[in-house]
Length: 639
Image: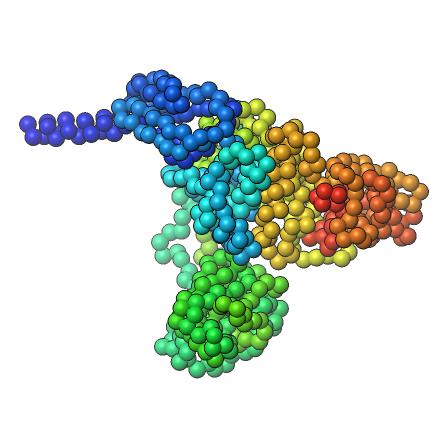
């Protein structure tokens, strides 16, 4: 009898669990719903159970299907709020503080993912003064799905842009939303689904990739559990890196009691491969005694260590005050009170590098500051190698698979759960990971646009995207460039209706793939939105190449999106133009603005046929703009 009662209680508990009303993570307190559009609400309840939604003085009824799925459609509602909503199906859920406004799905890789918190030095004032409760972000948690779409997110919340709560906002999306809000005074919702270092294929659905055989073949393999298990390293087949001598001894190399022997001079900033150390992957320690003023003694402080490749640990007077595990973030460490002292302070930095050049990235800030005192950290330091990583023998290496880079993996886990949520449009900032195959990207980007529009099923939703900024070494002679070709492929997507591209060629940094100036990027995206989503009669883009005509020994270039006229932003002649004859051997060219056209020539080319503008990874001075101060997009005529 006891067993029967226990079984009955168990079944009742199971049944009650299935009968509980459940909402997707997006539908919750403080959400922003799309104004002026029919809204779909959905969720799960008991099989065939009745669902009731009370909202804005009306009641809506639905019935769950055999699998417990249900949906209710609300009529279009004007911008405003806040509203409450009651949803009942056995149990009742009450949602509070609901606004109606414009919702934008913002996605891409790291330059979209980068939070205001990462750029809190340049945007310290914006964070401190943020008070926009009607701008809200839903941060989609990272995740992957190889076997197929995942119906819901594991977590997530709508957060308003108020003070310190703005720190987790995508910086680009925040400034985009702020510009839109300032213009239209309606609530703006950001659904931020972005992951650093990811290719466009990971964000597309299986159906969206059907025209790409390699991606389809990979997806089919990834559905095979045995195949995925083959990437797991068997126990005992792991090669351990050598011990770090700086941590192995009794006296650690960061200790004040340690007496250094055999250390050599090195400069910060700089890579060690450029300072007499050849092809070293391993651990390198840096030490230096820094003289600090008495006013800094015992006070909290900040240390800026630029960027370091790859990982680092900072010790001051024997205490660890900062640590970063990968190469991209700028190093900005808080030094707690009580660490610093007047006079000499021992700084030690443990740098670990596994590939390429290791060390401190040039042309970044390196200093410590507290109050009104700032002390420079650049200059001569001492270094010693703590460990050398030898290449693994071939038989010791095991293939690996990066889950987040697999085709459809991010779509399944981070996009699919949102496709029922009505939105205004898309913002996309991605391409760095695909820059090695720009011709393929020319097909993939339009395919992504088509894929997402089909999944949301709201017609040709506005699609706004960022063209890659300048990055890597400057070149002063004509050269081939995969990043230039990538920008060309991105520009080609403008042929897709209802799209806009934010040109960012002038917003990059040669030594940082994550440039600080996210505000201008977001505001240029907002200009695109004003044009294609809000139908404003504005100049929203810089000059775009239209046509070229050869006239004797010169080529005359015409543009669209001239705005109020062509200018250069520095008052000098247009720069970074190149010209070539039929042999396509380009040389630097002269250029001048004549009305709304640019004439290009070179005394070296008597019969010019082709011209290029800003055609390199990182053009030195792409100074052609319209009078609205929007830069011209790079282009070439020789494809």
